[in-house]
Amino acid sequence: MDASEIARLMAAYEVSPEIQLTQTAYRLDLARTWQIPQGARVLEIGCGQGDMTAVLADQVGPDGLVVGTDVAVPGYGAPITVGDSARRLHDGPLGSRIDMRFETDVLTDDVGAGYDYVALVHCSWYFASAGLLEQTLRKARELGSRLCFAEWDPMPAHTGQIPHLLAVLAQDRIAGDTELNVRAPLTRETLLGALERTGWRVEEVSTVDTSALQDADWEVGFAVHDAPGGLAKELLRQVARDKGNVPLPAYALTAR
Image (tube, rainbow, N blue to C red; front, top):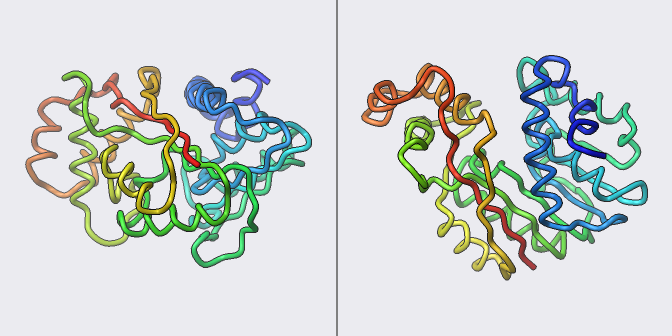
């Protein structure tokens, strides 16, 4: 399938078709870079709404399987909940190769083993701490033979990306339980160190194009309204646009 066909399978497409198409196209580019073969068994940690799940399911073909896990409850998310999104995918043409499990933590719950790939895609900053992410990476080493990983890089490539960075730093000040997207942001170098400590051997790291994504606007909006006061938020109010903020770069990697 192409990006448009996959995007139409998502529940969020009915609400924001242009946004969904952009998000799906980005993830399809990631999956093609990783060259996941048909017939593969993939464990996706932090599946959320299933944006990456749907793309992975298309890539593995009718004989493959994608098990998506997320600690969130099915009612999490707006305007479409993760549970509603999962039901839409399960009922669609990719449903037979998708198994999405919410309220599921790979550290404590049985999610199977022997996967060909384990994927973590733009979910590592959701973890409550860097230590918890490292535990999960170590567990993933037991569950699968290869890792596919992608995340934002908090090192701006140019000044236009500074509002997105400030939004990340402002949310990073939030203590305790939060439903915001940023809880424990890591640099690329810190993540690479965690992979080495948990037994993964990185094969290739690449920078990916994020320029079409809407995430910078979302993060700026979250930070301006919900982040605690401080220098990052004060500067953010001064430099951010109402719309059209430029996303940070992102990186993708594979490891064995």
